[in-house]
Length: 155
DNA sequence: GCCAACGTTGGC
DNA sequence: GCCAACGTTGGC
Image (tube, rainbow, N blue to C red; front, side, top):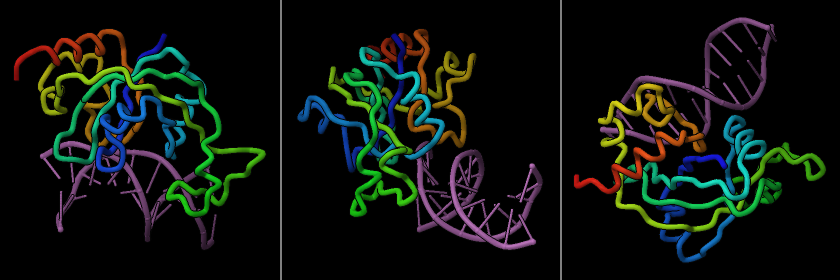
């Protein structure tokens, strides 16, 4: 079983939306590095931190579970979708998505707190790297446990 | 809203 | 295949 961190912009899709829907497809990944990890390594039964980005409260907000392995993201063929990719062909899709199930909310762990914890700098977690734009990244067991631990601390 | 960092595109 | 220009991401 692998562990992941998935970024989402809560203004368009938040952990609360996921909770309501229980399961949602994770569409719109349009970065090759992220796609490759999702398509080739992410598997049903893996867990993922849900992370809110580009918003007022940036950080880890909860946990989800991969409930379906990667399959073609149909929004790439929908000319009305912001995720439309005119260069992608139906018989050779370029972009993929997984299905994510809601597991639980966590007490908020801000990016600022994560950056303030030396644990995440050796080895370096991509999340704390300046300029990192990966929307999907692997998380080690140690990093996972540390963030869970931090969610139980008082701020 | 600013801007640094990074990915993508396209001319050559 | 290089690299400048451009677009996007995302923290602050």
